[in-house]
Length: 289
Image 1: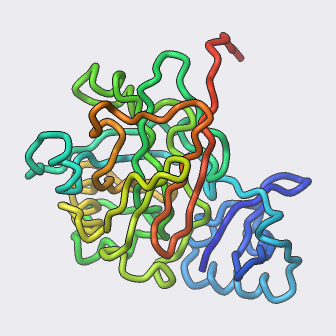
Image 2 (image 1 turned 180 degrees about the vertical axis):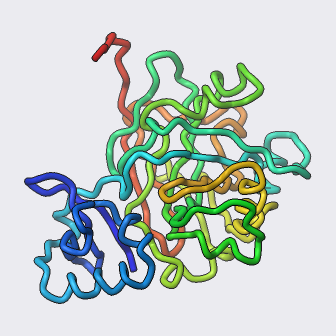
């Protein structure tokens, strides 16, 4: 299944994407418009979706305004240098230990909404990534059972403000700017996503193909990531894992090819769909309250 959230006149609603249509399945949500809440109910949730879809109204996918398909996550986690070719293009050896950072939850952004060029930097870079959506609580989860806590997968772009990222060893400041974690366009459940260890990932800036990789190039695969993270803390429904990016980031070019205001950035993961954003200038206007 491909589950989305779309904007209706009365607010966000859950949708099931079928071909070129979106089926309004809000009747299956028991008062919540968030697909993860439905999936967390297991087989009963899937049955509720199928029942709601039989007679629910439909709209054209092209006419639907898609939003980020989940509420603000408890955690957005990203792994660094997880593709060998990306590690090499930065001049570093592939890591032997998983390197994790946080993206702020306020960075979560819709799949087709404008992404902000920070008022404090022009070193804005792109990173196409496979994103894992956690659907169940998990602690000390062995790799062989990692699939049990996965609700689905999305396409994401880990926008990175490189000068702020390099200013501190943790990378958190450069990775967590507002709007810099767009995801979507929907959550694809594992049965439809298929084998995630062999998916192509691509990123275009305008019409220039910058990144063209495959998830099979990961150093630490998705089960290894879940096993490692849950040794330290629980993963909970709605948490997101950005699983790393292949070679071709703007910072690796000489001179760097950072994105500019007005650029159109499109990222796509095979079988999961594409998201796209126009880079828009942020103002430094003070906003309080």
